[in-house]
Length: 139
Figure 1: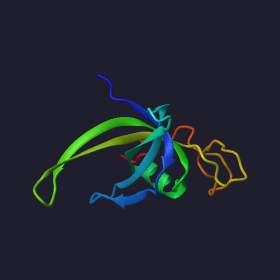
Figure 2: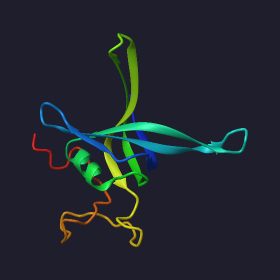
Figure 3: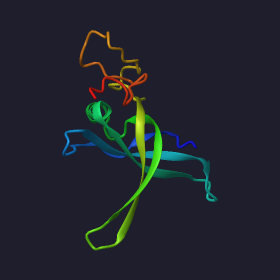
């Protein structure tokens, strides 16, 4: 079986970074993704897709992504449910990201570049060539 999704879109607001009770970083953000076709009125439609990333990837996304930035996410689709405060069952559909690529430049005057562990400056934006959950995880 295969559960894989790849999306490219713009963030609708800054990522929200939180830490679980176990101390694991969790970042949530929404991507606005245009559909590849136009509706009957000739207009493009957009889907707003909830995304979540964990650990180092969550911290990187929180530090380097912001509202309006272009990003690609590669992960799996997750559908979960919970009981709301009113007792009603609620459903959540989200993309759990394994990899994120930062597609917008650090500032409007520079082109995207690749991040490497040997780059000299710690404030270089990691336009993620491949930063994933498997990178530098201490457990």
